[in-house]
Image 1: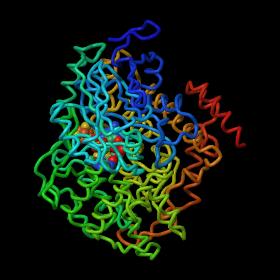
Image 2: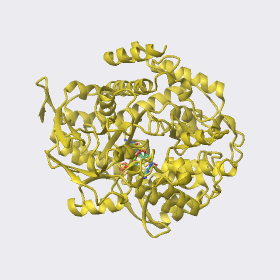
Image 3: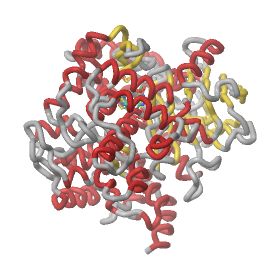
Image 4: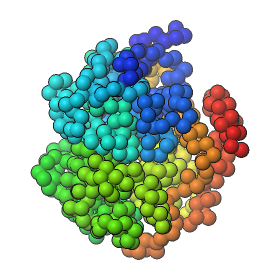
Length: 619
Ligand code: PTT
Ligand code: SF4
């Protein structure tokens, strides 16, 4: 229970942030008011509000002036299903816009129990540092001996000092060397912050963050919360898909994607892969030896196998599709090794598989001098190391696929599969216009987190470019990119097992004492989403244009040559119509810029003024 500025008692939220200045080696506790909690809920909502308010326009993402924000929501850390997740956010060095990721980690629970809903990290440490937060105490420890180690080695050393359940977030050589898609790793198999959050950590000389919290979380109705939590965990166990989920987790999606011609193959040239079975969920089951997961979860899904080096590797759909079919590697143990290397170096597997696939296509077309052919496991392995250490071709790819394509020139941008600079994740969209719209309008660039509309789209029909599809994209952006990212609860109980959304307002009531309807939660989501859009526009200035809301050229210009959707490609004119409808429904103008009326309606009056000033400058 915490007092807030206006004297109201706040439950569910701690009502305070920890601000850490690495330059000054100083930490201060800041109270925030109930309005902030009610307007932005937590997680991604807090992150964008903080970044909007505090970042100077045009700040270099790898400079001390950028902020790294760790933010949780009012459900995080309570004994509620899958409530052990954390948003990590910053201005992205890969895209130049808003960037974030969601990571399952003990650090989420510890941060909340230490009394903070967010940690805001600013400045740059003079030398490699570990930030240690133990309840009310913050220390800056020398990380000289950890610098240069991979994330597994780093975590082992820190665990030996702080125990098996300490919250630990670390970067590998990728983050240290400022690879633009370096991410943050926890628990040797959880990775978050695709658009370079690991590089932002590295730029601050921050090797790791250790959090130990031991306080009680302030629930409004502790008895109700305990009973609800117990009932909800029981409910999850009764779901028909539970047993199969425990066997395969997200790996079941390989078969599904293959069946529906959306499995990214040969740098998104095809939607089917000849060796899909060999890298699919059933093959994984044969070599899986244990399962790992995030805190507070009773449907853990981190399928762990021994890779081709006999090392542990935790497999998920995106990792396997991107480092398997997308680069033509059809041996699951080898894919597992590439995945393990990505985790060790702290490189986002999606962008990694994307840039390797791009290099293979560039090599095939004779646009680069290096020879790297489809399915070449050895060369891919070497290339991953070269990316982490920025050597040769790896150095160029470490800047992301958009940069690499521009550097190569010729027509390389036509097969660089990205949106706003973020590499597309693992769904091919030659025949999926709604999913293409989802990628194109996602909050961080091409990521499936905001609206995984593809599973619905394959049921309703692939070839339509209808208003209904636009509505569905927005509906999912509200629930997934909005609610789940602000509450920072895992969305998979709902997505995969059908755990009903009605549970969440009940959880919120027990935790915060406030009745929040889905209508209110959707408004919070719209507010947050629109502010993220305003942030992109503010950063890009006159370089902002609606082409940034278009899916990759490849899906318009080349056809699938295999599978039951052979011949399919996207239609540009029809996509244009969908995008226009999308803007209209969002209350954004024909350039995709939120209007003053929309911002004001969402309670963002000051933000509307600032954005207007910025837009007037280039009009
Ligand atoms: C997410 C993206 C995904 S989405 C995957 S696998 W997936 C990749 N995982 C990586 C990894 O692992 N190592 C690595 N070096 N890079 C990786 N990059 C990729 O990152 C993950 C699960 C999964 S598994 C998914 S779908 C769901 N994502 C959620 C989300 O985004 N929000 C939310 N509220 N709940 C979610 N639940 C599920 O969490 P990013 P995790 Mg992730 C090893 O990071 O940047 O958000 O991109 O966090 O703890 O590993 O759990 O088939
Ligand atoms: Fe983590 Fe999987 Fe559980 Fe979600 S379902 S909280 S990703 S272990």
